[in-house]
Amino acid sequence: MPQARHRNCVMHMWKNFINRFKDLYIKEVVWEYARCTTVAKFKNCMERLKAVNQRAWEYLSKFEQETWVKAYFSHGPKVDNLTNNMCEMFNAKIINYRSKPILTMCEEIRCYLMRRMVNHKRVLENHPGKLAPVLQKRMDILVTPSTKWTAEWVGDNERKRFEVSRKGSKVDVDLIKYTCSCNRWQLTGMLCTLALAAIGKRHDKAEDYVLSAAAPNPANVAPAPTRVTRSTLVIAPPGATVTPFRPPAPTTTPPCKAPGKAPSMVNNTSRPKPSKCIPKQKIFRPSAPLVQGQSSTPLVAPAHQEVPQRTTPSDPTSREST
Ligand SMILES: [Zn+2]
Image (cartoon, rainbow, N blue to C red):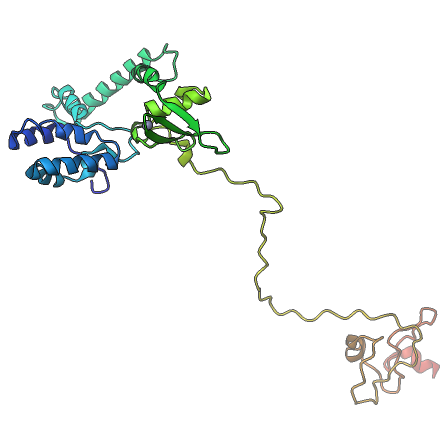
């Protein structure tokens, strides 16, 4: 898996190291260096080893620090194991299933994991505490040493950042980011002695600050979207849009107060000047064709005047009257 972080088993590294170097002085340096939780401490140790045994320093320098030193481990898994004992235990459990056909083996392993989870559920069913019993015991052991450290508030607004000191040693504990300068809190999610001293200063519950791989760090969770207010709301101007062709709307004209003589269109071939009182549409599109000899009717007839009916030459009644 190229994207996965790999780690070496320090137990195997140590066995190879002591087989290669028989010096008793450097026999346990592999374990000591692998347990360093800060980069500065690890580099200091490597410098001391270089001064004592050059070949041993060259041998350990060949390994990538991310694979065997706690200071370089990822903070994501919340596991700082240096050995592969968990893998070996799992292999020992499934050794009876490995000789079976592949589908049967997978089914047996699934049933084994199911039974194991059910047993853990039953054990923890009546457990009153928030933490598991093993973690609770580890934290109870650290409470007494934490009282020897002095936590001092650094002055932040949330009152959750402290400088924990003892005999010249000072570390930074941030209860908002869930970090400690010793790096143990970030590695395992379990509180260290220094973080417990800072939490004790606030009289908070230590269980509320324990992290797990399943529960993400609250400091890394994306913040909720801020409420949109008048000051934060920014409305962009509308972009330029091309509208389809549309004929211009008729202009609103004021009513004609004194309609004079309507313009005659019979003998007037020239285009009349557009009047403000008469729309163009009524000038160029008469409603009925004009008969020769008939005077042009006004476009707007008065209300009290009757419009004369049109007479055609084929009408018989008109011939009799004449
Ligand atoms: Zn710490």
